[in-house]
Each structure stands twice: as C-alpha cells, then as structure tokens.
Length: 480
Ligand SMILES: Cc1ncc(COP(=O)(O)O)c(C=O)c1O
Image (cartoon, rainbow, N blue to C red; front, side):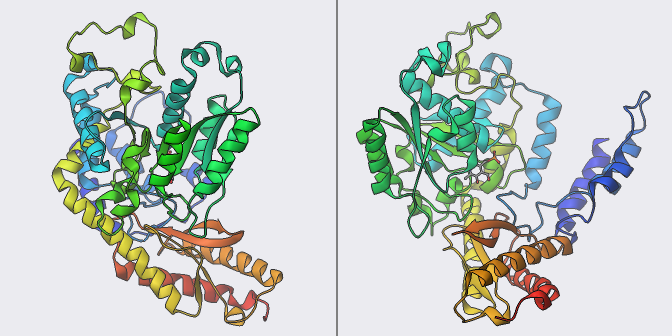
C-alpha cells in the first residue's frame, strides 16, 4: 500500500506546477462521486487509491502550486510528507515523556531550535499545537492565569472582580477575538487599537487606551502585538509595545503566526527586534516553515509561569519520574492531552535543509512580493493598495476609464464590484489564485508569497492572468 501511495507522492511533487491551481467542481459533483452509505464489507486498497487519484486529487486546490497566493498557506515539503507518514506509522502520543521518550525529546529539541531562531534565551520553551489559532488561545489562557491565578480556573471568570481587557490592533487576526470569547473574557473586551498608515499599532493610542480603561474600572492584563498581520503583513513596533507592557505589568503576546520565521531572512529580520521580550509568541510552521498542515507552535519566555494554567488533577496524569526531563508533560503547557508527533516533520525539515536555505527561500518570497509591487506601481492598469512589508501584496485593477482621474464614490463601488468579479474569474481559470481583502474600506485582490517554488516569472504570469480576466469584464464598466 505504501509503495503504491508513494509513487503518487513522488509524481505529485514533480508535476504540481502543471496542475490547475483550483478545481473546477461543485459540492453536487463531488457528492455524486463520493457519497455512499458506510461500507459494511471492506474493499481493495487499489480501489481506494483510485478514488484518491481520480476524485480527491482533481477535486482539491493545490496549495503547493507556485501561483497559489491565497490566504496564508504553505506548500508542504516533500520531506514532511514522508515524516508525516512515519509519524503516523510509529503512532507516538506525545502527552508526556513517559509515553513517548524519544519523540518528546525530538519535540523539545525542535522547539529549542525555534526559540533560538527567534532570539529567546535557553529558559524559553513551548510546544507544537494544531495551528496558530490554538497557539493564540493557549497563550491567552496562560496570560489570564498569570493575572488571575487559580481563582478563575476554579470558579470561572465571574469570580474575577473586574472585566478583563486585551489590547490588539484593528488588524489583529480574528483568532484573538475567538480566544477571548472561548476564555469567557468576551470579544467586546478585546480593545482594538488604531494603526498608522503602514497598518502598525499606534503605541500612543495603546498607552492612552490602557489608561482610560483603568480609570473606568476595567482590568487590563494582556497586549497582543502582530509580527505579520494577516491582511497586509504589517509588523507592529515590538520594542515600544514591549516597553508599554513592562511599564503596565501586562502580558505581551506576539502573534507571529504568519511572519515569525521571516526573522531568518536578512532584509526583514530587523523588523522582529524585540520579539524576544514577549511573554509568548505564536508562530506557524505550517505557514513560513513551508510545512503541510497541521503544525502551530507556541513559545513561552518563562514556561514555569504557566504551570498551573492547564493543570489536570487525575490519576492517569500523575508523573512519577524524578529527573526533570523525564517528568516533562506537555499537558502542563497547553490544553491538549493526546498529541500527534508533529515535531518529526519540523525536526526532519530543519535538519535536512538547515536554516540558511530556509532564510534564502523566505528572502526570495519577499523579493517576489516586492517585485510584483514594483510591476504594479510601474503599470497604469493596476494600483497598489498597501505597502509590502513582508510577502503580502494587495492591489486592484483599474479599467481604462478610471485611470488617472478623480474618482467618485460610485466609481469606487464600481471598482469593488469589478475587482471581485476579476478575482473570481482568475480563481476559476485555474492558472493563478489570489484571495480578497478590504483595505481602507475598498475591495482588494490579495496575494501572499509563501512557496519556495515561486519565482519572479510567476509574478508576471499572475498579472497577465488578472489582465486576461479583466478583459472578460471590461465591457461592464461604466464610462468614467
Ligand atoms: C496572523 C495570523 N494569526 C493567526 C492565524 C491562524 O492560524 P491557523 O490557521 O494556523 O489557526 C493566521 C492564519 O492565517 C494568521 O495569519
């Protein structure tokens, strides 16, 4: 079975560039091919592999295609495909050292490499999670615990005398709001701080908001800074925010899910100065470490502070080992008990390619984003809608009638509508894929270069694909 499947894996990695990026399919089409009652009798593996090849693969979007620019999506690496297979075969369950001694040490080693790459000293530690949303949730639970102690874990947030407050910029990822909702803090208690013209948190507004909330009897406990926002890739001014957090005695969490690994790329690494002053940092190996889903990561500057936040009180979680490394239990640092061996693909990828190659690949992604920004700025049919900070670019198409003229509200609405149509056409055509964003209230096509296969030539092809799609829609545009 494995040999037959691996033939497909090898072939897929070789020809991914030639596949349509997104499938031309519908839920009804897929249902017609897949839906059936639960099988009572088993069937041959060859038939299942056939369904995989003929229905599942063509019905999938190929996130590893060099012109898949949607969302923040990694391509996957060949070595990680193999590592995931090995991890499932070994079926280690990384609850604690006693359950999986070598796998737990591999996870601790991989975490150690990442904390070093981020600039933390050797007291820092952490764990892999299912993804960035889980890492953000875990960090906010830890922050709440340091502030409220065991009272809230035992009696619930209602036992806390004042409403808890979190500060994050208007550009923060929604997983922060979701975490606040899940932790009983409430979405409305995530106070959104305005940003500057490069979409970075305004530190003067942050300090003002905290002071205002304290005066109103609210209870600030945590600041969430961005190191690569999901919409434009902005990196908040980390040293200044760390200063406010220190002065105010607040937990500083940095959401570096998208941007964190870009610290390895020389031309942007300075943006991440101050990251090591955070109490916690979330970052996603299944984003800019290029790994297949799933794999998020959370680093604590001082892991001993969170002991107690996730405490379990059950016989089966009593640790009887004396030696500290052998007493290590991941359940003390996050909400999950059973955990798959995600660390194998992180460790294998880092050890196989090394940080120099990863830094070069990230640098090349940043270069591709800067390159397309330059092409857009030099053209008269496209408009760049946000500065390129890392590898995200936001732009829109301008029809001839709306170039170089003052535009009314109606024109702006027309541009929104037209660009939405163009984006959908590009996605349907299957040559390239961009997703959407709202920039200062206007519709933008948004791309994120996050693939070691992508070249400058791919950026030119993307613009050609957008122009072709625009030609299909051009006749609908009002004369300006
Ligand atoms: C800045 C940021 N934070 C958090 C997340 C959530 O990560 P995940 O999809 O791994 O849960 C994303 C996802 O794109 C992100 O870009």
